Amino acid sequence: MGNTNQKYPALIACHLLLAMLIGLLSGCGKSPTKQADTTEQTFEVKADVLKKALHFNGVIKPIAVTNITSPVEGTVEKLNVNYGDTVKKQQPLMTLKSSKIEEDFQTEVTNYLKAMDDYNEKVRKFQASEELWNLKFIPKNDYIAEQNAKNESYISYMQSKRKLEQMMEKLGFKENIEEVNFENYPLLEKVLLHQQDNLIIKSGAAGVVLIPEKTTSSEGGATGALQEGSQVKAGDVVFAIGDLHGLAVNIDVDELDVNQIKVGQTAVITGPGFADITLKGYVKAIQSQAKNDSNTVPVFLVTLAIPELPAGALAIIHVGMSAKVTLQIKQPEVILIPIAAVYQKNGENWVNVKDKATGKLMPTQVVIGETTLDSVKVYQGLSPGDRIVYSR
Image (tube, rainbow, N blue to C red):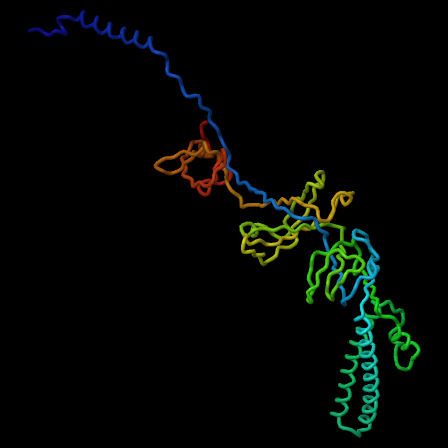
């Protein structure tokens, strides 16, 4: 039997031509493949400082407060000022009537006269001992003993004198205490017979008269807003003098946030009562010990100072108004890249970094962390200045 390929060459050529035509016709019947519509993106890596805001509620206070306390127990006989008045230093605030004042005054006068008499006697004895010592009639130890006795009596005399001066100042005496002695009997009689049951309490600082915060004295008395006839105890805070050259706000910060706050950190203060005014302050102090209530999370008292106020602010902002405090917390620098730039391979995270010299793409493994809506934080694998390429 002969070779078919040699016997029918024309027939084989016809079959091949027919197959080619069928293939071409089949290809023409299909729609062309659509390429993916992708755009190459380039992103330059850089380190950013992220900020987060902490928000707190507080109350407007003076930037500084001087508390005025009652030195004795008594009854308010007369109020010289109203709450909200502006006063000067040493301006009379009220008159306090107390039977104990006279008793204390008589005691201080007696102690002063005794101390003065004792000191004068010790001075005379020392002068005599000094003369005898110079003549070598007494031993040195006797001379030194008299000298020490004189010095000790002088200290007691000065302490007693200071106490009486303070009381005389409170009672409104104009006399010079140096002239109050046994030799000047008319003045001594005038002082002793002076009515001492009224005590004038004066302001220890210039500022605005405020109702003191509720306080309790060592004897159990408490004060708030005073009126004529009010009873006060020794040590009670009867007035608070507020310095309104600036303002302050106290906030409570829980144990989770307190270590993120630093002294000197800036703050923004707003409030519903002064909606059109924004105040700028700073963290002045952070209490080191928490206020721990068994029913709440431990909180730390943080004081904010507002040293400068906009013009006319005090006509709108008043002590006791509520305040909203915003603190911007700086966090360490981080690298954020688009989420779309990260792909997975063998269970690891990778990005394509363009080589600066050759322009080639270099697969680079990265360690990623928290994400936002479109970004992811990179902990390892990239450095600022790297350029990553991805499709989206």
